[in-house]
Length: 198
Ligand SMILES: Nc1nc2c(c(=O)[nH]1)N[C@H]1C(S)=C(S)[C@@H](COP(=O)(O)O)O[C@H]1N2
Ligand SMILES: [Mo]
Image (tube, rainbow, N blue to C red; front, side, top):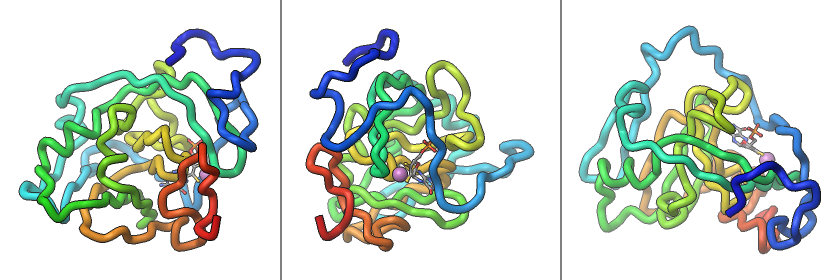
């Protein structure tokens, strides 16, 4: 992984098929950007097929182990942004706390306004996956997911829920918001799994 200055030309082993590298940080989402006055009523809820359901405040999350993760992001609409450095909580920490049952096979990420996305539990707990509060040294801006977003960099970026409020462990693979609207259930950018009929 490359952690230095962004490259001028992108080596093809970093850029999946039919993606274009941008140094901008486009903003993409459905619905409204939440406007938090403070985080007093903000919680992250973890539930479903777990032994220990949990509700965490933002302060409690910040006291958990933190990590940096450098990675590239690939949006299904065709842009890739290389060399992002995210800081946040390893998803493994949340899984360690929640203790998923044997029956837990998938995770549904729940964001504000009922927005959801689904992924297998193995992808959620990968070393590169995290719940980020900081991007390139700056606190997330409201449009990029403040105060907390998922970052699942090995899948198309729509799986990286902004304004994350809940993590549900399920036994079945239930389609999330874009998945119900035709996006792929898995979304591997290297295989161009853009739409469900691909
Ligand atoms: N809550 C929420 N998270 C979301 C989305 C959304 O509509 N709502 N859109 C996804 C999509 S399609 C993309 S490409 C990325 C964009 O993240 P960015 O705006 O930080 O670039 O957020 C993802 N996370
Ligand atoms: Mo997207």
